[in-house]
Length: 93
Image (tube, rainbow, N blue to C red):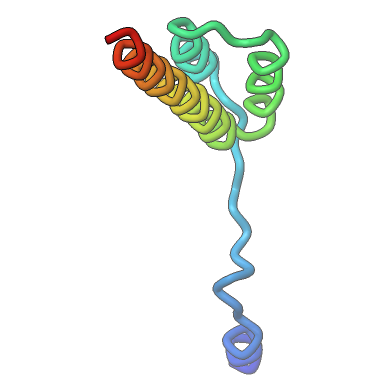
């Protein structure tokens, strides 16, 4: 009984340990398919595979984060091109 009381006193929900699992072959295939639509450096791909070797969920978060960053950069480039194109039309008139 005292052991349960001591565990309750020292229980801290912020210190919960997460169990990590390495990615399966199917998970690695899914990670690879996510990268296929984009041109990425091989270093990024190999980093994702290395992370997946220890923690599959973290590898998916890494891939999603990288792809979101890549998509946002492409959107900014397109917006700048549209603004530049509009300003040159006004100068020519």
